Length: 168
Picture 1 (cartoon, rainbow, N blue to C red):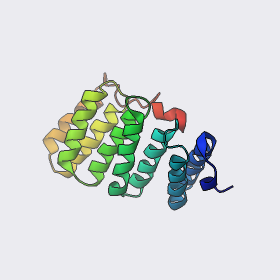
Picture 2: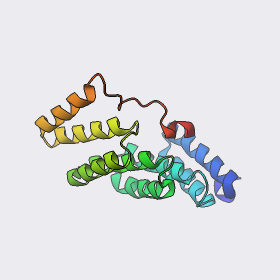
Picture 3: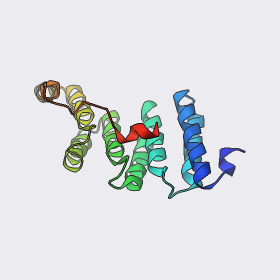
């Protein structure tokens, strides 16, 4: 059956995995359709945050921050403070970076550090901000931030045990 004809939690899970396979194959239009259908199959289902996160990530991979942003916002809303909450906020940071919205990026980074200070994604968030500062030609700030991230005691760049890993 086409995934759009399957409903409920089973349909959602099938659509989710189909979308991830298509995304991995870089068949982005099909992946987007599968993920959107999966979200619609069970709008309050257990995979909704993951689905919206991956749809946002798909749009980021295609350099489409305007399409990605609402996906990450939906992922954030669905996640609450649970799994995918840090990833969804990091997705919004990526969108601001892709859109060269420097002020928004800085606000989102502050929010991330305040909300998820012990997340393994903090290093990736700060690295994104440092790269944005380089693009702005704010080399002194970028350099300080990168030096902090390179410090021997900084474990924030460790991506092991990300909550998202269990859904991939």
